[in-house]
Length: 466
Image (cartoon, rainbow, N blue to C red; front, top):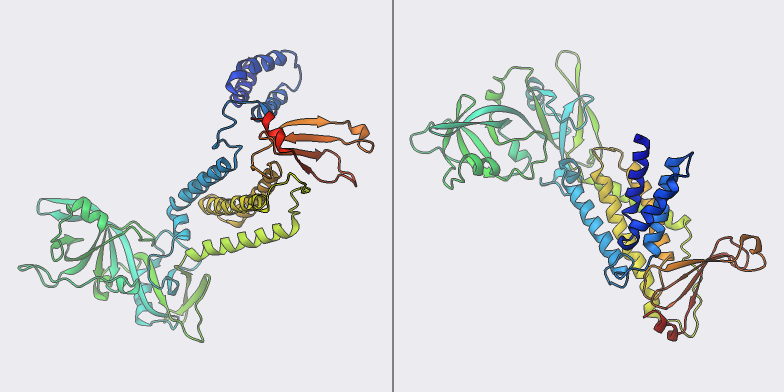
């Protein structure tokens, strides 16, 4: 009984594709036929989808003449444009894919590198102990001109004299924003406050949520992690693409950072030294630094400019597109001109329409591949199959359209028999519902009829289709 209900559910799903005026009768016929199927009933039910698609496409409908129907070129372009917009939104919504699409928020980001413990690439968690950072900062490697460090921690911050909030505080070295080239002007503590207060930078979101958008907050002294801190400024944390969610940054000098436990781990960044002998690296590389005890400490360095990865995927996509254009026959059929053929401008619209479809498909598949990066990290494995399917669909769709009005052809009619393929014509005839012509598609290719052929009709035929 459960299997019977499953078969009925499959038929109801297929019935939803049938035009509403014919849906009830269609479902009743398929349901009646189901009683006579003893074996492979499930395959029989899934076969109803093919019949439903055919009926939906070839059944006359009062909406068939609407300009924005999917059969029209305008409707097709709008449909692809909506898919392109959705794929773009999906690509920029997740932070990982958005960072690959959008340019880096940091100036000269290609000269910045995230330095992680050996074997960790783009680590989302702290991996570098503070003692290793201090050792590198004191003995700057030739590969870098500056190093910086930060560690996000949860700490209560005094937001007002009577209240405090649990915020994400980045214990950072004093040169963090200098290395990132984000200008933060120095601020003097207000009168009566300790002049030795540590600089503190607020994110714009924390300033609005916890400090009520106080326009005079610069210079205010707060108690953060047990020490006084003076607010130096407010920055927009929206473009913060570094690991860790941060509400405020506590900028400390080397002496304060050295007071942390030696094995306290955090994130380390470096500004790469560029010279003729040391060109800018384009991918991850390893760094080995002597530890002063006869050994060495290894690190993994990753360029911060992730947007180059998306551009690399686009290059792979365009290269694959060129290969497909080279190996795929672009012949859309035989369209011999006669006295009823339209002007050259109207015939060129077919190629403009095909170009627009391919351009939108490029955007759909590329952004879709970027959006699927968290699920399928090797983006080319998503882009290349999507490119092949999309390109095939564009050519198939173009071959099924009228070369004059660019609408999908309808009313497929089989002509001839397979046994008479060499004596007469055997194939399918399709017609333009606006009376522009007929399309003959051979079912069996022969030496004299190997591709589909279009026939322009006399303008007087159009009165039969109005």
